[in-house]
Amino acid sequence: MYRAGIRMASLWNVKAKLWVNGRKDISERLAGKLVTVDPPIIWFHCSSLGEFEQGRPVIEKLRPDYPDSKILLTFFSPSGYEIRKDYKGVDWVFYLPLDSKANARKFFDIVNPSLVVFVKYDYWYYYLRECKKRKIPLLMTSAIFRKEQPFFKWYGGLQRKMLSCFTHFFVQDENSKKLLSQLNIKNVTEAGDTRFDRVSEIAENFTPIKEIEEFCGSSPVFVAGSTWPADEKIIKEAIAGFPDLKIIIAPHEIHDEHLRQLKQLFPNATRYSQLTTHDSRLRSNCLIIDNIGMLSRLYRYATITYIGGGFNKGIHNTLEAAVYGKPVLFGPKHEKFREATRLIGSGGGISVNSSTELSSQLKKFLNNKNELDLISKQSFDFVKENKGATGMIIDYIAENRLLTS
View 1 (cartoon, rainbow, N blue to C red):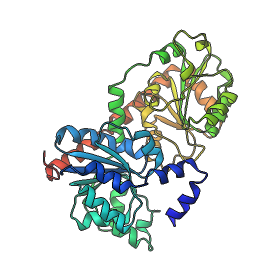
View 2: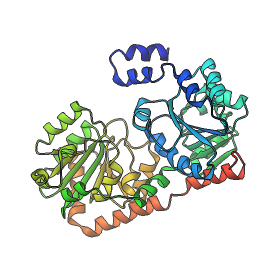
View 3: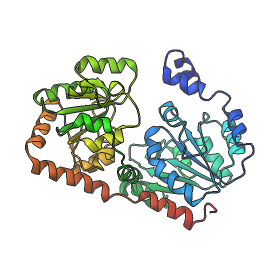
View 4: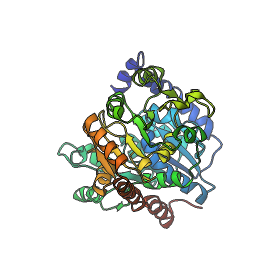
């Protein structure tokens, strides 16, 4: 039913079309790449881009420790695959074929992995069952469980069978460990979220962006990342009373239509692709980022940050901003994002419900350096105190000899 539905949607939906086209002749293409390769192969699977960022620290720590191993990375979603299909940290990047008994058997016959790592979630029954059947070590990293999930419901028998396939779970919090314990699942380590390690590594290896430095100058800077139209409307209203504030907006989607909408909302803004350090348009106080890959460095230039999605389906990555010791503001839809609720609890994050509240927070921090310094420190300390998940996973693999170095 899913296959039929997405094929139909592909007639008009760009992402659905990418999903379908990316899986054409996938077994043949996969076999062609791996035909002369001997184990060990490590297979990492990520649903989308966010999960890749959680898996990436583990990939990049494993590679030097096991130089004879090859790494296959698969994605379910086009939003992950299309952005990271040229990622150089692995040997191959592919879409995951649709979950079925035949597809799973064929996939494992071709890949024959020595170790399998799923990141956060994406439970595919036939792939997991085939992995267990072949007695291949299977890890779940950065996992998080909630009592509302089918695993913990009377009707969740199939989902509980999938959990039984895993060799070990590395979960983000104590509550997840307790929920698994209720199912008599004891092969669990509370490790935290590997994204803390990832954002820390990015910050430690920061490289300046000359054009951004020129744009910011000595002005206070408001960086809004991964924004959606609802965020952008609120930002527009909130910044009206701050003529000296420099604004950098990095929208979640950078297709032409959205960029045109942004330009209408911020008519004096300059697009980054049209900017040079000698351009007179540097006098503009608003910059629109029309590329992917720069956002994590942009937060370094901020006085105050805003993370988009909180007025849509849910907020994006707050840790990319917090690692630089910045106040992190976002919309109300953050309850399902543990790192965001914990950031609020630490004092480093603030949820706003309207443009009025956002404007009030901007005023407070821009007019009170002590308040700004305090929340900045709390934000930075939050990330620093929660590093280390990647090391636990790597140590487990080494101690249990899941791979040969």
